[in-house]
Image 1 (cartoon, rainbow, N blue to C red):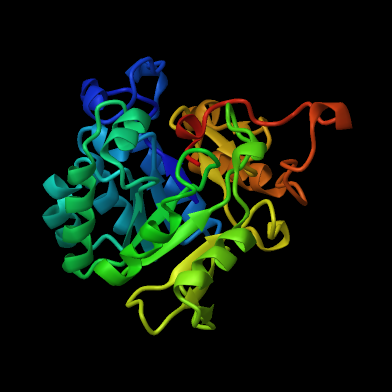
Image 2: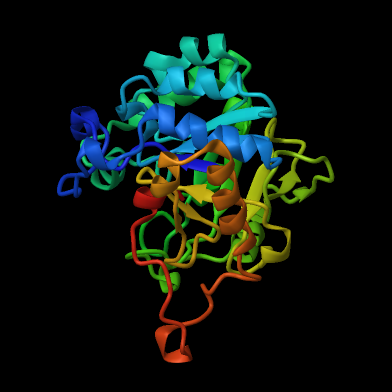
Length: 313
């Protein structure tokens, strides 16, 4: 279960997010108490792993206290967080203390100018420092890369090389046509694997189970960490998908690609049993497959139009 706790709602977002972002009033966003209540109901249904996402989670004050309380819920086995790393150095000790189970750090470029462009006012050295601290902390740490034509295709091997520098996994996530993103700008993971084998010819499939998601991993004797691939477009894994997403405004999305979902806010006014049944009903509506490979001309007009940062991708 992925929980988005921010929708550009905190004043500190000016340090971590691009200019021009539409901000949502705090009154429209779930309180931490409401998030905990929903997650408690989800745990009663058998959901045992929670990932905190954004936007950027660390722009919301008190987010680590939320993580600590989620860790303490009966039935919850794992709590992880996805971040752009800009404030990670300020929280790494606290994350160790609360026993966070994993940190995923988004990093799409090693060029300071490009990094500032995609993050607004972000500084590459801050994220690299956060990666170094996370890797040294003993917390399971991964780097997530979104390959895009004309933007970072010439950097992918260098980004993969961070698996050797830091001894952590680097994962390439195929671009999904959500919001303003176009699948035409994406780079297929089979192509990336072929390209990376030019630098590391001994890259071979790693049969070891790593993480809870759909990523497949490859290892090389020259790299201390693995190279992972999440291939929603060229390796459709819908039949194995066990994830749902809770947006910061209380919508439970059973599939990332559709704009449909269940608004849980009205059920927060009722009993815990009513909330749990609403969750169950929403999960049972999970579609058989995503619609990323379709267009409106195919008769599918229900694709998700919001940005990934708004829905906790």
